[in-house]
Length: 287
Image 1 (spheres, helix red, strand yellow):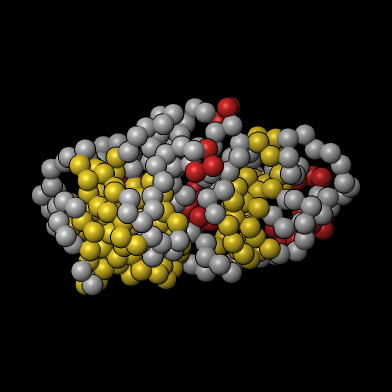
Image 2 (tube, rainbow, N blue to C red):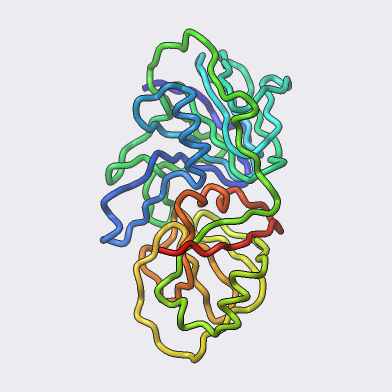
């Protein structure tokens, strides 16, 4: 293990994430891991990793780093202006940093999340079988200004690798996602069921625990006590306000709000990359 980068400027929020913390949901510990699995997995493939290594996940950019050692990296995720020593570099393909180089991740123009991954992955202490950071659970290493990011000792790639532009994802301001009915879908009024599936909702904020969306206020047929249900990444809960909450990677494992639906696993990456005031449409998948 060797020091690779030092954080010289802290952005909005960043955290180290590997594939996730499996096997502990029964004890109330979230899965964590990457919000956008497609961008995360693309980085692993570009770097030819045989196992999922740890990446640094950044919300809306703003981070700056100084290289403490030579290394090979790739940036994936939302479209961002990225600079090495003030010179623009291309995302979705490998680039080299030499000791003393400065890497800047400026504002994200499309999407909201960017992944920085070194060859061999970042390295920190394993806690409950994962290096993923979960601040509320006091698990993982928190990254702030002055933090040093460590990595594996690995040989360099013989060739630059990356994705051709035509294979890179697009991050649209309006998305459509598939979902499955939740255990309480039938408890909502017919009007609310129709509004949920026929009207767009607007993303108004959130974090790694949950995304808040606003549209027609959804109503139950009658107010009643509901037994708490197991939740997962993609569960859509509806609190008394009637405005849905999409649970994300760090969300609780059990919830007491009515669950109207669950987002299809293959569409979670689109949800994760939403920006403020983007719109989302829901399409029901029959099981």
